Image 1 (cartoon, helix red, strand yellow):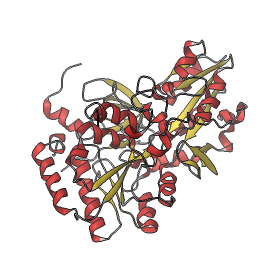
Image 2 (cartoon, chains in turn red, purple):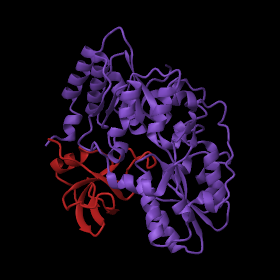
Image 3 (tube, each protein chain N blue to C red):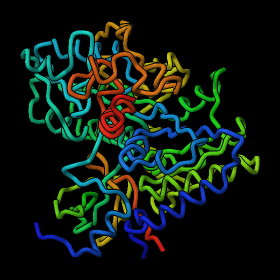
Length: 86
Length: 369
């Protein structure tokens, strides 16, 4: 896992500070994990959090996710996409 | 592009805090409820309460599913773990919820096959790997978690997995807000709406709070500036005598929510006539039951559940804390018999429970208060 440049880390933090290995209370789930999409295969995506940890998530609820996009995931499933903040 | 730096920038936060002090009317008290446990946690963690004018009071709401789960329901779940062919699966947070015979972790130590999973999909995979056993998933959570359970049940049907069962304890945030609004001693002037629950349900469903109860709702983010901005929005509405639903967290929350997630929930679940909430009692139409079409995967259909009601330990005053009548440290057990290491009441179990957050960030600093 390589450290990300500061600017890129800050983009993740815009949508919450949770990471794949520290994702708070699962049952609350009101705090989802922001991740970047690396690869899309069918309805599964490989994603990376701000610390560079990777996992695969189901895209059933965000079927048109694209590589490079920021998603909010919870329990291994993408729940929504993050809007860029201007 | 704006970064989180700005949402934590001390100058901006100070400015927002000054604005809040300037706009509050000195002769009135503003009581705002943050519905979500994640907000409670952020408020304590960042010390937001110290930045507020003294006449803004934050009331910690019922937005922690672990905290509102009645003990009898946990016992029902653990009763299933007694059956030798059952593998009982649940999230890590559930492992520490005390039932009347102990927590899932304690029963695991006594030899029950209880396993922690990260996602309901993991529990389904376990069922596929162990076809001789019955895998029960103890489902719990609000509208953020319910779509994952729904998706898992849809996949279980697709894959024809016959040894997978879900015990649904999913609850809904809106009926809980309605119950609080209907309560005769309700003194809340506005709500900080939950952030990521709203990613799924959107902002529109909160409109009844404004329309029927005349209270403003601001869906809020979790950063210090998010919270202060949302409080400014609430105070301005209260001062103007208006009640609208506003979305401070539009960078994550779409107005309409996630239609696909809502559709999956609608396919799998129906609303229960009533469900018991710890501390709040029975609330009508406040929880989700698995629909008849998915009965082969419904633990409530497949197994016989005792459905017993277990009274909470008398000394624990979780109910009063949940309703905002008592502050966490005013409970007789707080920090003595009841600590995050050995919780007696549910509010101490989850890191986002009001008592656990208060214990971790506030109480030790204010010892001797």
